[in-house]
Structure formats: C-alpha cells, structure tokens
Image (cartoon, rainbow, N blue to C red; front, top):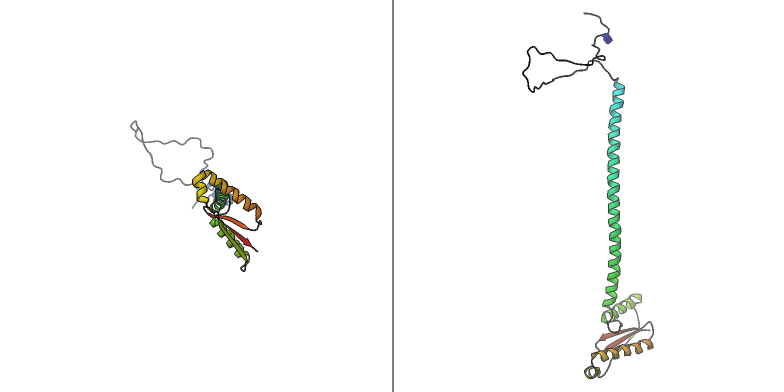
Length: 193
C-alpha cells in the first residue's frame, strides 16, 4: 500500500545505547526470570559473500588446528615409541650376545676348555653341511688308572693331570682337528682329511 524504499523500511539500531523494559505493575523484590522467545534481524548487517568467507575461514582454521594437534600428538607418540624401540634393540643385542655366550659355554668342558660331546656333535654337523662326503678319522682314548690318581693324590691333582694332558695333546694336533673331552678321563679327536 505504501511505497517506501526498502532501505528505509527498517528501524536503525546503530545509535541505540540502552534497551529498557517497562512493566505495568511494580514487581515484587527478588529474583525474576524472563524468557526471550525470538530475536530476529531484519536487515542484513553482513553481506552474504562475506558471511560465507567468514564461515569457511573459521572452518578451515578449526581443521588446521585439529590436524596440527594430531600431528603434534603423533610426533610425541613416535618419539616415545622410537625410544622404546631403541631400548628393545639394545636388549635384543644383549640377549643375543648372552645366548651366544651360553651356547658356547654349553659346548665346552669347564675344566679343560675343550669341546664336550655337544661341541663335537656341532662340529661334526658343520663339517657334514660343508661337504656331504666328508672323510673323517676318529681317535678315542682314555687315561689308564686315572681313578687311582684321584684316589691316591686327590681330585685337585687329578684335575691338574687332565689339564696338562689336554694341553700336551692339544699342542700336537692340527687346528682343523676337533679335540673333545668325552667324559671323565675319556677323550676323542675328530680329524677331517
């Protein structure tokens, strides 16, 4: 009915400093609540394109912050796992060395330092693996009347006799030969040809 320009149809709120509320009756003293059901902006204060740019910018900022936070968290976890992996590598190396040490100890006679039966078996298996048609000689011997040495002079002297005999024989055989203490005063020498 009235032809008013669109820009003049709305109330200008740009100069409002205070909004007041007038009630018909004087309210009682105390705490009161008021419920506002709707606030409607009739005039576009921000152009639509600017609004989209702001929303997209805020969204991109949130994505950037989220990705940055996850990267920082992953870097911290990676550093923590890396230090654990280094520790595990050190432990694995120590276990490997300890295992190798125990393996070598299990194949040696403690008194004479010679191979024991297990050490000789391992040596024999390695020789067979090198060449299936291995020519070998086996020398088996023992020390006669050794029990009499132990009974007469004691086990310490008997041990010293075993050590001296193995030293003399060990210096007389080839490096390729496998000298072992078979048990007690019995010995074996495995000689590949």
